[in-house]
Length: 226
Ligand code: CTP
Ligand code: MG
Image (tube, rainbow, N blue to C red):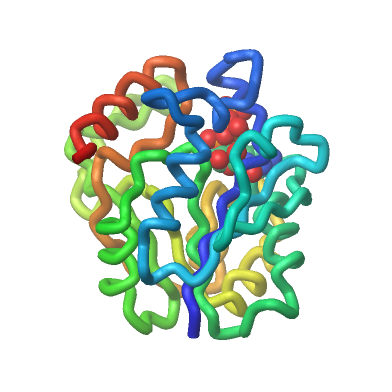
């Protein structure tokens, strides 16, 4: 089986409020999405990379498509719709047991080492796997005036990539009846009663969400440059 990357990049970046979608903002002078694509191009394990953008995306042509990258103009109204549409577009060109690594365009700090760690540690796990970070802070839950401390024992923060066999991922996302309950791909797989493997990620793989995150991403990427 092959390993392919699927990058949802059809969001508008409302929380970034930059005037243009955040995946095109420069990080160390290079568009965020280009960093994300380059991480997969730098991995010898990845056979092909697919990028899902909006049909009317005016910026994608500035991210020069090249060998090994295919742009799919089938982005949807939600992240999950974009991924479902992307998976549908792959149909016919991918084997049911091929692995799909779904990775947010907004995580430009990914690198070949993290990709390899995810693939190696997930191995043949029947439920797939994802990068995640053990929670280090003390966690509070505040509901209806009650405040309680939640044990962080066993708590992880999900990152991406999240990798599943094509057949399992499409089945899980098609079965998801409550899209608002599905905030990542693994949760759709969990809803089938399966337990994906948690593989330790890295803080450098943060999701760029708010304006201040740009500087943090630049710090990690600068520290990594040769
Ligand atoms: N995404 C997508 N299609 C959507 C919404 C999001 O492909 N309809 C992608 C984003 O481009 C991003 C990833 O999903 O790479 C994670 O989403 P998020 O960080 O929430 O990005 P945005 O939705 O663009 O940001 P915001 O929620 O602040 O608007
Ligand atoms: Mg969003």
